[in-house]
Length: 64
Image 1 (tube, one colour):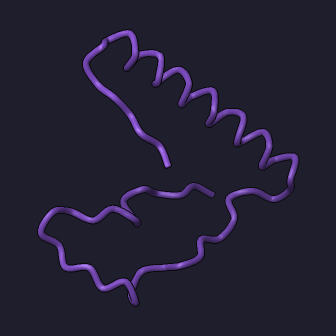
Image 2 (cartoon, rainbow, N blue to C red):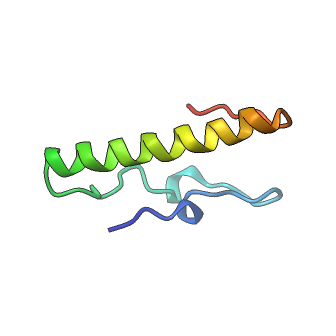
């Protein structure tokens, strides 16, 4: 299963009714071991992207 960012994206000018937005997302993993593997892969991808942004010295990123 994959989480699609577009399901959570709000475009400028869109009306937002928070009562209609989901507050819970179904898990995208079957076990803690699979979760750890997915987390490690995502951390690796983010680190690589962060290095590219740092090397370009033109953009910044803030993840919360």
